[in-house]
Length: 405
Image 1 (tube, rainbow, N blue to C red):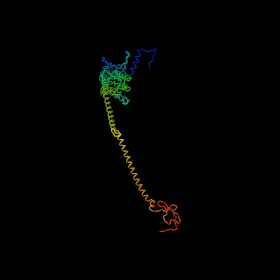
Image 2 (image 1 turned 60 degrees about the horizontal axis):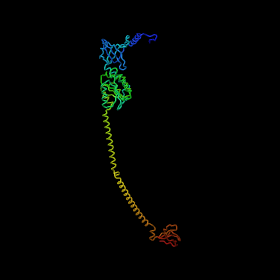
Image 3 (image 1 turned 30 degrees about the horizontal axis):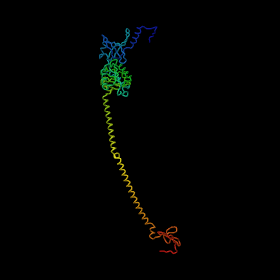
Image 4 (image 1 turned 90 degrees about the horizontal axis):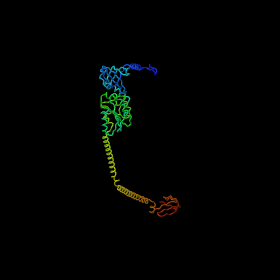
């Protein structure tokens, strides 16, 4: 039941502390995991400060010497441990601590197993998908760099970047890259750079180290912070064989800090060489095109129609004259043949004409109705007849005497 108090009926400090101690005592024994931030040995007791690597909160752990020495391997500052402890509240000092009953160092195998489980969970959420990765700009105006204080990684990135492109600018955030404060400081620096609109790309760089040293770069909080960045992030952690989870979620993975500078900043000498090569290629293509067009134009100009237009006109004129003469000859020959045919036809017509027969002394006897008399029996006595001669004609009458042959 909640304790009923008021300004008129308060409880003394000792009662409040006693009640807090009783409430904490009800928790029982618990397993707690954390990172050793401080370690102090005093006689038969070892005092530890166990820090949460994400929330940056800590608790004091009182561990008997024999419990501490029983842990394999022996824990040191910065190591991760699992403590089976009893919560304890001191009324005299008003402080909370844990009394260790068992201490276990988190081994490499356990760490790797946890990282693998976290990797699968984050991959299932799509944080490592290639579709969500961004392409860094070709020439960033301002590069954000997160690295250790006065670290070799910082020098490698800055020197190699300046060697490749001397005018490149950096905004450097120096943070702790290992230990209990690494995750918080790296995450805060990442968010600060991501909020800066002038920063075009962010490099997170650190030299090589053991698995324990690189654990902050596999922390879930940092991984999710990188996944939510609007600015492209380049991971340059450790050496080629080191692959923290940050390498999987980053937009670009660089094998080393030097490689990160090479991937983010273009080499000015290489770019000048590329530009020179492209200009030379364009010049060759343009020159080749001009040469082809000039050859085509020369070929067109060398053709007779363009080389000597008057000669073509003369040739066509000669053709017209030849065709005209040919037409004249053909027409004359046709007329001659037609005249000859007409003369032959006229001679035949004259030869077959009755007038020609009459001119030879023959005559044509016709009745009044112009019908030709072909026999003496066809006429009657006293019938008028017309005798047609070659030059004139005679009107006669048939006599009564009819001669027969």
